[in-house]
Image (tube, rainbow, N blue to C red; front, top):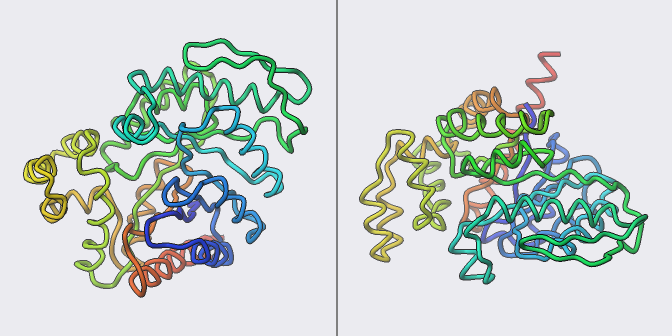
Length: 336
């Protein structure tokens, strides 16, 4: 299976991120991704290009807050810096984040993302011919990319949690990156069938990627508590509860406390079975076994250390992911 590292959680500085990228590259990681959290995702992936030589570099994901022409120019820049290793991951964000943080109307997120991808594609191909677009969400008049890009078609992967965006990924993108707010049932029953529906329209297969919150610790209780903090930002996001309900888990007390503004209480009330379904936690052998099960359904997995860790706990979490990636490489080598 192909494993990578997803960086960008709170508590991890730039120097720590770059050092971690070097460690997982040496361990044999397939990819390194930067989340749109804390730092600018294109700045971080540009820095990653300078400290790595082999892994694919993902913006995993860049939000649609930037004008699409600006996103295209940034993607072309990182792709040149990395020698053609960049993958442009794009995501729509929860509706409240789009509205409250960026003033974006996301009432029709799939339609907006469809056009966003179309404009990026057009802008990336505009070095030889000016690009003009008149759409519902974006209007471009005669844009021309100043330099010929390393690749006119930088791969685009769409971040997805629900079926609408997953179907769009199968239709217009090169890949899908499934959000870590996911269970195996949701992945198999909801997301992947939607991707296949989009592929039926496009007539081609897209790459399937999965973002997994991964807590490596020999103490199962400690590993699970590390996972718990990772869902703080989703306590008031509707799809968190939709995914849980599909797994037959109803975190009603979590919802009640979150709506009352008690985030700490809501986190504490998340059922252990939901944490176990949405994340992967435990010793290195336990984590490797769980990831092997997930890898039966996707082409690559990006491992995200638990959010909100710091100091020794964060160092332990990163070291654990390095061990998992190395163990996976060693297993493949033994298997021939």
